[in-house]
Image 1 (tube, rainbow, N blue to C red):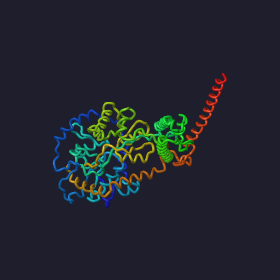
Image 2: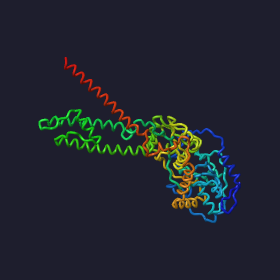
Image 3: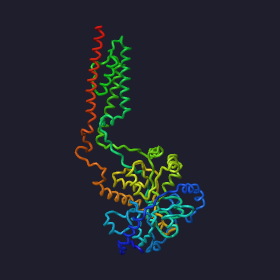
Image 4: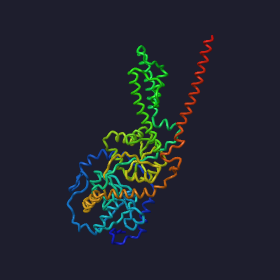
Length: 506
């Protein structure tokens, strides 16, 4: 069955396309297992393969896309090209039907790769024949034989792989990789952390951490002891004499921006108080700013903030990686890297089995949503869109494993240069970024007002920026603690007075 793409040609009935989609989506789930021993043997032999494989024709090994002589435009027009689609992977492949009518029905475009194919088909009057591929795998080079979609391409059963393929040397030897249409990093997706809920002493513990409070208390005590020592040394120069308790009270009063009843007379004592006054102003301003930020922004407890902290969490056994078993490209990138942080991660994956392989990105996201302790590695744009549409997951800002994304064609394909030139023009014209942003905006528009049941609907009592009793209760607990301390001190003073009176009478 052939599918014409040119706009002036009638399209194949939607029933055929829908059946293809159903066949791909209803494929029986299979257990995904990546044989790391096979990958290890591949890495050992990789240098030999790179030395022995010399592709014919003039190619650019910097970008690994063909730069051979141009074919006549007339020779490229009116042909039928066989297209194999490894998987539906938004925002690069959103669906298979590339017709304008179906796009209007769905409300968003077919994806970056499908947009490129559609544009070239219109310009060259091409017809695409969709080749069904049940495995939904990109394929790898195993003992000199390509598997998956790349295997179909190498064996001549397909002319184009419609997908965002990562540029790799072994792929460039077996196929023509077009000019990269996207530079993309690998994202890290984790389960959304729980929001801060214990607000008992929130107003005290959050603006300053315990170590800051401890250091402040220690500074007051040390400064008080210093003032006591200075006043004692200047006793014969008529310096005001303070007890140690009075000195502590003086520095505490300065800390809370209160005056002191008696001023010291020496310049040494005044200099000490002046510098502590400046330090107290800075601390109080910082405390106030932290309180404003605390009430204006939700507090989330992230298990780690970047890739290095994630690797440490994996080494400690607190987290486990989740990766798509249908594509080993990112696994190979980690294994090949000479950076110490990737070598440490590869050791955990290979020796301690700190990785779980899933059948596609959707299954990985479901695993991350249901259980904590998993971190999903995948294409940044794809994960970003899933993070927009799902409140149970969050995408970290730190990206790793930068890659170039390309469209593979048959080796020495006459269409390679035309596709590369048109992709370059689309990239420079901003069309790739526009298509990705348009799809992201559509996803956001569908989920801006409805998420899963973990989302808390904000009412007048829990809106950002509004100080309610739950958040302000710490101040009242401090006040009650002060009353309790005053009563205990009063009891202690009466007890001391009573003891002194008894001793005096005897």
